[in-house]
Image (cartoon, rainbow over all chains, first blue to last red; front, side):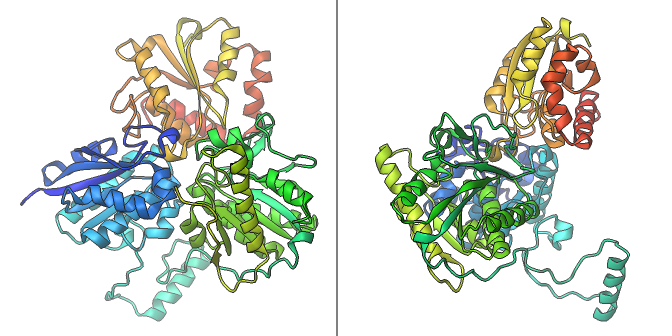
Length: 442
Length: 156
């Protein structure tokens, strides 16, 4: 049997180039296996060969997915692989999205078998589980051994052209494929058995999975933004300098309320980000790039909005489980409601952060019955989770800014994005709507 | 384990006890702190230890007698503790950094462990490290400390 040719996709960290500071690097290729690929190769033995590793920065990939996947696919295709593998990405949100997209595109366009691996909390699962095998992993590299074992096992089955089996046997997320099988018992009996097990609080497996994300109807718009009280919420971790309440850099257990009474501009001497999910350089240099207080104050002075609510709410969305984010949203909604807020702007940065922010947006909207707009760069994640009004942000570490511009131009850009967000809040929509991208894509 | 006889490597954590907090408590006692870093859970790296930190530890301890060293952790969750402790014993779990496939087998402790705590001035401890310790979920603290101990004893 001829050795199967495998190409492995990794992000800039697992490719050995660097962490957040290198997340912007374009795709590149290396011969042979790298990082976790070395271990996968060991498990494959003579049956398959990782002929090349393609590496791309997580921000480069997710900020411009069309272009990046085109480039990555080009590099992969050159090696004429039989199988394309990606990851494991664990709970790294952007990495999971990239692994899912690369695998899905390779399946579709190269007609090859693909597999990747990540944690259930990765937005990559929500987006791509139907298009590729995604092996289930733990949330961090602590689970690397199991991830390598799981990926190698499935990869060997693919190489040997063996039966993969259902998700529970293959250790992957359900692909939404239904197969007819001969069951031993009839449906009615299976249903009653399941009910009994449920009542006894025993484990049971449903035969009909419900979609994970619930959708809610968009709330009506604000009647007159120039009279509205605008609330600000972020999953991007902007806190007073020194992070006095020790908001966690990942898997936050809380949201916090801070006063911005009298604050005209978030200056780096007084504010910073506590977020561990993106390169903090730009947000620390100017926190308005994540939480746009400066331009909202301008708009307030000019009478374009009624007023900015003097308190804002913040968490770190990095790795925050959906259920926890829903809990935060319920409490925040109550506070916004009590404060007489008329509409809310939510901003997010990285992958799991956007997942958290979109959850905040849709749950605050439902709970407080107020229109909410979500500003983020990762539109596909926000759409999948179900934010109703979405406005495109500039980049993961600075959704509301561009450090490449002179300060004055950057502030104009931020104002344009915020104005678009306010427009989104004042328009009646039937369904989820992605609003205008008000800037040029780099 | 006597801290006064060891070269000490500190790996603190931004969501737990910071490296500087541990370093200043140990330096007050006159111990030899060779290196101190504060790690932060980096999403893109799925929680791996930073490359520069791994590089520095490799330079300090590779090829040396591990019993001359002690590594003290400040991370306050089980998962982070697993990654940090494994990196300095059986090698970087990400398979990517300078300590990938490098087994240093350094003796690793958590700063909350009695063996360490008892060798720090009580007043200093309670004013700095103890403040963090008491603010945490005690069950998670216990799990974290147990994880470090298990990995140190080769059971993790």
